Image 1 (tube, helix red, strand yellow):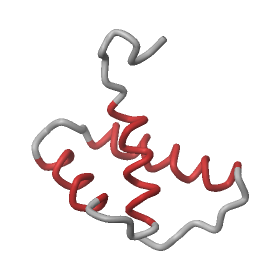
Image 2: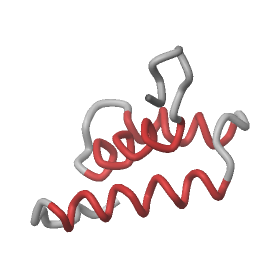
Image 3: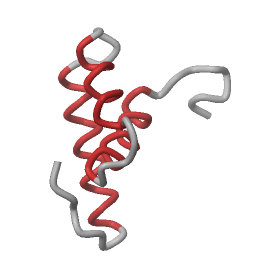
Length: 67
């Protein structure tokens, strides 16, 4: 199981940050940008996280918030 051995699923974590950021929750946007800028998150991972966030919103019939 991913994460059970202390492995971080950066893309999944960033999916939740995208969702929080889209809904203007706390410092989510700041943290998301920090991860991208400090090299912890590649452009490909960022795009995948954003896609997953959109998939989540569609799956649950949520209206996508503006970023």
